[in-house]
Image (cartoon, rainbow, N blue to C red; front, side):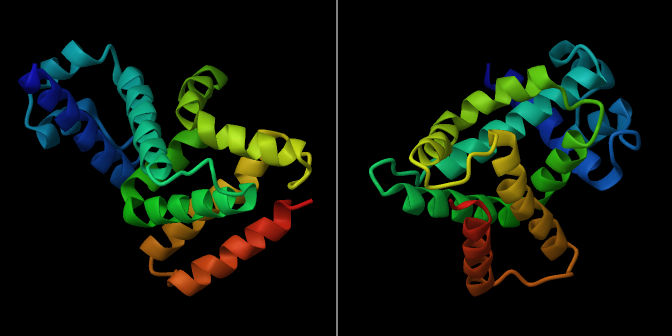
Length: 189
């Protein structure tokens, strides 16, 4: 079982690396196989198609990001403190995982991005979604759809992390705190 998981993991890691560097169209399955150290045929043992591999990789990356952000999530804190901690952890994740950020950005602006896939991955973020919903119901934040709140906040973190990876900005801890303050001002009621 470990060997199966290791091959599958190697395939996903190779796909992540190559797609973040070359895009979807520049990443042939043969390149993924070579990078993963497996035969091209073995990929089809784990994934029905390249599309299936890409969708599964997206789910895997989203689960990993959710697990990382939720490690320090504390529902007993005041809502504003919970939201700030979520944003801090998202920024940290994005800054430490540039390949994942590049991949998620590509995925979310491609035809792969579909409502049914997003519905699947949103379950990983249930506590975070619930936190923002409570804040909305208690009129702490603006009454906007969840997807708008995510765009105003999470997309900022991923975009800035990409800019840092490209050497266009230096996101110091102080600057991240100032950005979080600005995000709060954007959504607070």
